[in-house]
Length: 330
Image (tube, rainbow, N blue to C red; front, side, top):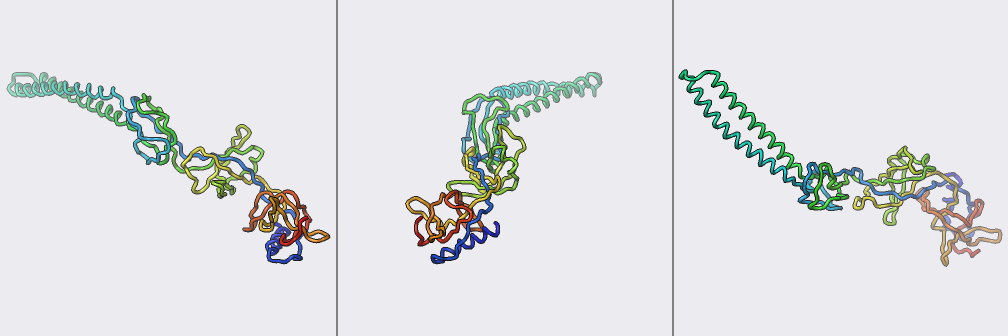
């Protein structure tokens, strides 16, 4: 703030306690920040789909839009009846091979006994032992195939990829889904605001700038976290971080005010603006005495912790401002 504006502010702050005839102050313009109002959209930092790992029928769906879930929590269950048939077929094959293995083992035992008595040949016994080894290997292969099929059946459970809130559930119970198809979308990692600003203001946007966010009629302070270099549709996209941003409604719009430059303005303390009959007045010193002059107030500005009001019209640089108390109407 300039020296002149500091003098003006000091005089205004003291004028409330001064009687009529206190030392007047000459109004001078001060430099204020120009704010651009845009709407930002609440976005989830992580928006991850929970996909089906196998194809089949969606027999259970426990997730609904808006639910809070933990990472790894079951959201749905998919059943593929063909997997049960495959397991049954593998079990039958294993049972048949087990019977053959039992016969082959008995044949091998008899062959070894005959070999000891010199009734059979070593080649015959080796062939029987090979048969036993082949059947044992086939059974082990069936066991491995059964484990693979059983694992596929377990993958019918659809799990939440991250902790957060369920944003979308595009499927319904009983639907047939394919591998890789989205069953639910979970938003996690917190929320932020994404804004799109006209490209003429792009050069004024700097990461780290303080911004104002209006929520529920109250202004909160945030920070411009990232400005994206790609301009599309005449707008530049940026992300705004604000502490405690609610995640109840992803996609909700909030009013954001961004600093896009500086300009000269006339400011008066808000406490020195009086309102009568719906009009706003400020005390002004004239040649024939002090009088109230009608003004059109603009945006509120906070200067050194004092709430000020911009005067859009009604005052000019050089006007002599006096306390508004007990002065006549112009």
